[in-house]
Amino acid sequence: MGVSQSTADLPAGSGNVKRIAEPKSWSASGTESDADGWERVGRSRVSSSDNDCDPWNGPSGEVETMGRSVSVLVTGAAGRVGRATCQGLLERGHKVRAFDLRQTPGIDDMVVGSITEAARIRAAMESVEVVVHLAATPDEDDFLTQLLPNNIVGLYNVLEAARDAGVGRLVLASSGQVVMGHRRRWPLGPETPFSPRNWYAATKVLAEVAGQVYAYVHGLSVVVARLGWCPRDAAHAAQLASHEFGPDVYLSPRDAARFFAAVVEATRQISYCVVFVTSRPAHTSRFDISAARDLFGFEPEDTWPEGTEFAVA
Image (cartoon, rainbow, N blue to C red; front, top):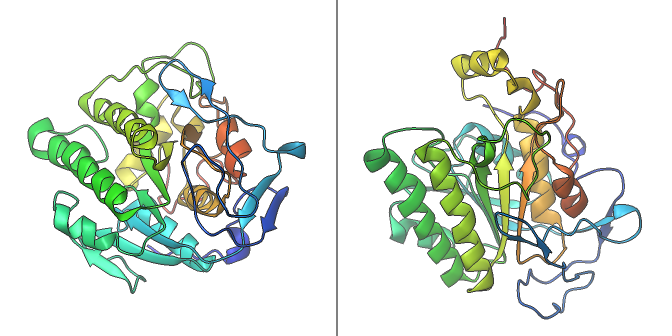
């Protein structure tokens, strides 16, 4: 799949994003970093986790972004969201290393392997500043043969490798399915208690909690992204279109790329936060994406079915 939009089509956020001098590094410690323009985010209480999603970031919610190239590892790079993310980061001038079971089109720096192979993922982390962790079994599947090795053992390997490598920021892909037991009061936000309804969602709850452990115990800067519904194929797109609120929780590949670029480039100092990420809802706002907007300047541009190449009847 090729994402053909230009750098101008992949903004790191909305029009009130400000570029700043080059920061030297991310820092998740309790002290200020020596990089210009960084600030400590106050922690607010949420029912499912401690969350650094204080939306205030200066006058008019202004979000500061770094003006330099960043070295980024994307796991699951050959997947639907992964390909768009890699392409978007490259178009914005970042250095991308891809990691997946198969070759990712258009990527020169590629590590082929499984996240269940600890040595392979550790090698891929060398000289990386930010990790976008997308690799996983992407939906409900057999627990012992698919979810356990890929979503739990693989997660552990990524977390440990990131800790050992001193990665500046780790972005963990979660899912709106972690709260899909709640269907009465919309929109659902990061403060909504967990309500998984299958083993896949349970593995994503574990990912969020494990990310919190590595943030507060080991000092990683962790951003949990509860991603919306990004169709993988025509059948998946048809399922979304016919679902009660599928078009409202749709996430286009282009908007996914915009979000991950925004997180990579944002200079706000964060220990741990949880944000929802979707495109614009077709009818009703089901997930509250305001934290992603306020923290990172993310502004979705697509509404279902914009941004998908799959024909929808």
